[in-house]
Image (tube, rainbow, N blue to C red):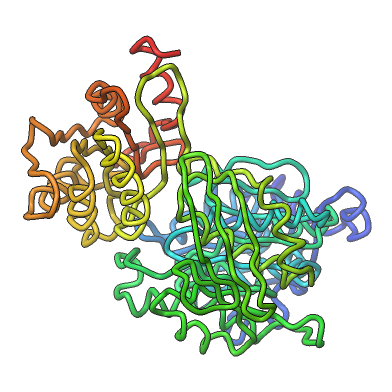
Length: 543
C-alpha cells in the first residue's frame, strides 16, 4: 500500500467530531458505529479510524469510507475490496474469507454484509428516524401516489415534511426527481436522506416501502422507527424475488410488524396502521401490526372511512365519504385523474389525521389543492384530436384499475382504445400473459414494446404477453399486423400507436410513467415517456 494513502487515513483520525459537525460532516470512530450492531462478528484491526461515509460501490469510495462488500445477483463485492482500499476505504464489512489483509484497514466479517448495512447505517447517521414521525407506505399499487399525497397534505397543514418515493424525494427543501429505478434505496441512502430531513427541521417523513426494501434479504428499512404504516393493497407481483405470493405478503407485513418496535409509546404518541379494508389480506395485516389500525373502504363496504359515491373524469373526481364513528358525510373534490385515486386519498386522510390529531374535515379541506404524481395518468395535451395518457401501470391489478373506466367512457362515445405496454425483464414472468389478457379485454388495438428487458431477449417477452392477448377473451379478436403490433423499439412503438388514433380515441401508454431510462443487457438508454410522446405528436404536426 502506498505511503500517501496510509498517511491520508491516519490524518483522518485527527479530525475531531466537533470540527466535522461544524463542517456539516459525519466523522465518527468505527467502534461507535459497530458497537451493539453485531452479535456475531470477527474484527481484524490495529487502530480505530474515523469513518466519514458509507459506500457499497467501490467506485464511490473516498478517504475514510466504510465499504460494504455485498453479494449481488450478478457479482460479488469481495472482488472489489482491493479497489475500495486503493480508493481510500478505512474499513470493510464483508462476509466471505479474505486471505490478504492490509495492516492499516479494519476488516469486519459479518454473517450477511447486506443485512448488517441497515444497522450500521442507522448508527452512522445517529438514528435519524427517532427525530421524525416516519410513515411507511407499502402495497402493490398506489405507493408513490399515496406517499406524495401524504407529503402534500402535511405540507399544506403547515407541517415541515420530507419524503422518499419511486418518483421523487424531498429532504426539507425542494422536490427532486428520483433518477434510479429503485423504489426503496439501499439502507445508507435511506438513512442519509432521513438524517438530512431531521437536520433540515422536518417533523415528518414519508417513505415508500417496497417489498424488496422490507424483505430480510435486503433489510433496507430494517432499522427505521416507523410511527405509521399504510397498506394500499397486495396483489400479484415480484415473485422472481420473493419466490411465492405468501412470502411477498409476509415481507410487506414487516412494515406493520415494525410498529411494535416503536421506542416511545405514550397515549398521544402511539404508532398506528392504515389498511385498505377491501383488500383480501386486510385481516392478515391487522394481526401483523400489533397496534391500533384504521381502515378505509373504496368499495363502500365497512371501515373507518367509506366511499359512498364517486363521479370521475380525466381531470379529477367528485365523491362523498361516510365516517361511521362521527355519523358524518364529507364531500370531496380532487384534481387527480383516475377513479382509483380516491383510495389513495382516503388512505392519506386517515394517515394525516392520525399523525396530526386533526379531524377528517380539517384535513379534507386541502384535498382540492393536491397535485398528481408525474407519470400517473398524466394527460398530454397538444393540438391532437384524440386523448393521450401516460401511466406507470405495470401489473395485472393496476391494469384492472386503469382500463375499465376508460372502456366505459369510450363505449359511450363509440371510440377506440389503443394501448401500448410491455413487461420488465428479469421480473415476474407469470404476469406477462395476464397483462396481455386484461389489455385484450378492454383495448381495440394493442402495441407491445420494450419496458426494461434487461438481460432477456425483448421479443421473447413480447411474445409471452402476446400469448395472453390472443387467448380466448371477452373482447376483440387480435391478429398480429392488423390490430396487434410487436415493436421492441419503444420510440417507434409510440409513433405507431399515435398514428393509429382517430378523433376522440384514446392512446394509453403504460409501464414507464415517470422513469427516465430503458434498461437493456449492456446499457440503459435515456428515455422519458412524456417528453418522447410530446416529440412524436410534434412530428405529426400537433403542437
